[in-house]
Amino acid sequence: MDKFKGKIVALLSRIDKAWEKIGGEAKSLLTEELTAELADSEIWNNPRVAQEKAEELSALNRLVRPWVAVRERVLELRDLIELDDASISDEIEADLAGLEDEVSELEKVLRFAGEYDFGNVIMRITAGVGGLDAQDFAEMLQKMYLRFAENHGFVVRIIEISKADEAGIKTAVMEISGDFAYGMLKSENGVHRLVRMSPFNADNLRQTSFALVEILPEIKPSVVKIDEKDLKIDVYRAGGHGGQSVNTTDSAVRITHLPTGIMVAIQNERSQLQNRETAMKILAAKLEQLRQEQHAQTIGELSAGKSASWGAQIRNYVMQPYQLVKDTRTKYEETDVAKVLGGKIEGFVESFLDKNA
Image (cartoon, rainbow, N blue to C red; front, side, top):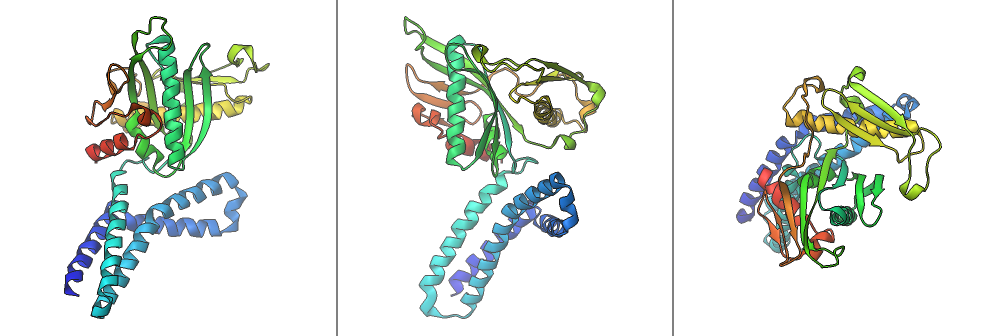
């Protein structure tokens, strides 16, 4: 049984290091506090606050409980080893191998070290240079992320979509919810480039087109302190594609943050209040991302600029004259373009996480 004892010590050491890295003690205390708060019926007099705390508690439990559970099972196995019963040696070896695999899987979570990595995503896809091909490419990317989200059990809500007249989309804004949604999808933030024989060109010429993917953390607007005097808010009449579903009231909202020039316009909801709330949520996410990029302490310190600006592409999708998808940051590549556009982008996500761990 001595051969197992060293592995148990090593496994407990890995668990303890991981526990320290995720701030397990502090998160456990916060879990207890939130549990006590939610057990008090008074808190439910304010359903919105109660719901936010319930969601925070659920997220904490999903992060903390697996580590607590695996540590308890390792300690139980250590006690079993202490019995020094050779007849159960094979059973212990199998259980130990299973625990080592489980800890290895849990350790992958440690790569999600960012403040918002555990939470949800606001994704905006915008067609760039390339005309119809770029609009078609933007829609291809949207479908790719929808399939990726579905494969990982994420919930997607389409906030806004602007379809192009002939093909594809001009813009799409989506909310993607699920554990580590932001941590996984932040690898997609930037300019994507497609090279292919254009299906929209009579001569079937090779065409290069671009699309911008913006990945923003979903955060509560109350977390980001925005001075009202820094905002310019315009309301206007929303219009639908091709003259369809045109609102008869001024329900669309455009909010501009004057110090930075960041502008968010939302018209998807018929209610002006709902559009304003959604626009403020997206603006808060954009400003927080910019704050982190500029290493500013507060929103008030931000200078003009924008996140995910048009620049060098982060990923190339080449369909002709050869098949290749290559990330320009990690150099990771795959030759099955159809598979990647079908939502299988895990290799790109993993290589990005490993590079930035």
